[in-house]
Image (cartoon, rainbow, N blue to C red; front, side, top):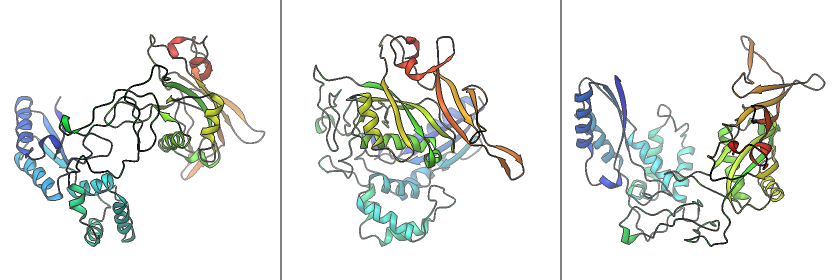
Length: 390
């Protein structure tokens, strides 16, 4: 290898009172001396986030962050190093949004009214407008954003329950000052509450649910990433509690068989979710449909087979392809496309002119035993289905 890229954070809780700059410089000089590789280095300030062990930690101010970053940059002058960094002021703005209360909402609204737009792009952000809004606020924005929170302090997000499946978030404070980590739970959490510490003997385990839904009308213009958010919110509104991933940023175990192109409608999309407290197929469809926006409707749902002796297979890896209806009115035709073959896309016939035909995904197929197209419900839910698809 002739080049390598390194990312560093300054102001991490474990070394908050120390200046990490010299350690970073010493490490990178050693790497450069022993490998002779070109090193691209990016440095950013640490931003505490809600629902993480460091949610109460202090954050460096803009000046403190910049001082440490500049020390790294000064220590790595010369050939072989390319230094970049995240603007410390942007880290402060992220900290305001990350842990702010209702006052942060008013601050964002004030900045918007002053003309702040497209703030996710450094080339467009108007830092002068944000500084004006911060200066005009009736509270010490920077001090409040950067201060550490005590373990007795009620945090603005205390009513938001993630429903973690393996542990209760423990603050990164001395062991004697923090609550014991919980290992499992038997009942879903309600807002502001955490589940029981241990599951009862009769408590149901989580269930992998496979469901089909339609996506029509204006909903066809909901992107795949936004669709994931729509489904997560619908599950919460419907009163379901999804099983979460166990990483640093827990997310619901929600998956889709085949992401749909923007603007393409569908009569059958396939998705799956791991749920605590699964009730029935009919109830799931009814409760979800009462919480989903217009154009998205759950058509069918079934509990998947679960066999601990067989590795779990994702819906996407089992996708054979889909069947599409192309054309309008009487001039329609059906087309089956493999997931690994050609795809439905826009076609430009000439400069500025697009060939447009109505397209609807009719069905989505899983791979059968002989690589033939089969229903996802047959492949994942019916007892006679091949177990290697579960």
